[in-house]
Length: 340
Image 1 (tube, rainbow, N blue to C red):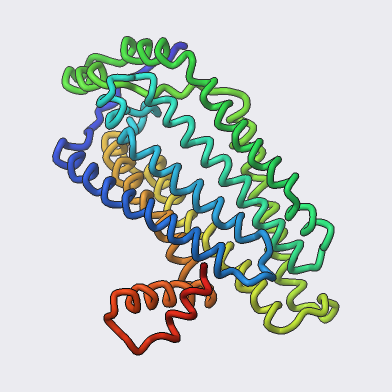
Image 2 (spheres, one colour; image 1 turned 30 degrees about the vertical axis):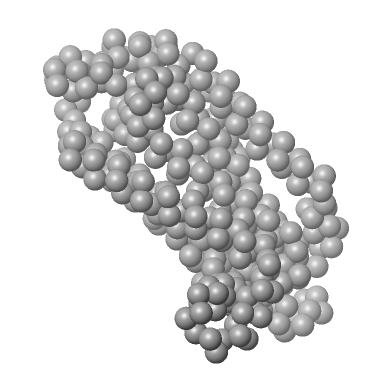
């Protein structure tokens, strides 16, 4: 693999910043792991029956996001800005396994691809349920469809692992061709594992075709949901059910808008407006900020739905009762027990 690298002055994050980021990542991801388990329990046990299997799509999406960020943090991803590759530290250096870096990076990307697929399913399910497309709802609620999604996500992970086989040779070639104009930068590159992403046809199709189609499909489903809610020909649903469906689609749209403004726009700003000299530091900080994205999504999910808010309150009410801190809240205890 040829790189044809040209020297561009670049400032890397300081060791102090790396240490702070490492401690921050440990705190965030330990919290997110427990928070994810808590959120999964609340969503599954407190969702109204009318939500259907949509609750599993919500849980699946949150799981993909959380695991993806944990994998990025495990090797302390450090993008090289203009050079478009990444330094792998963390567990890669701890176990002295340079090949592990690209495997973790590719698996993390596979979870991103899986999340895109699940988000598409969430939009389609919301549209089908809100517009009384019973056949689509039943099909997407079936065990065979869910099994197909599991197999698809597993295939994406296997695909990414297979792309890691030539990584060692590409990494060594990148180090060899890296310009020597800056001896300190060159030494840093030579001393650490480098994740070299080799372009492939599948990723090109996913990024240039599948991802835009998912955006268009999500937009179509959202518009159709809003139109049906306002139409006099809307299905004869109760006011409560209609409000619940409207809330569900609103939350899904807000989640996607948040990822655009919180993650995508900052990276685009870095790519086009930050001088290449400072791009590595900017991307380093933005990536660490993205570790909190699953935290936001889970908090947003638990706070936005009344049933989930009640479940959270009931859970902590049960803890207070079990610790005998508030003897007079037996009613909270009964409500909390209904979660399980």
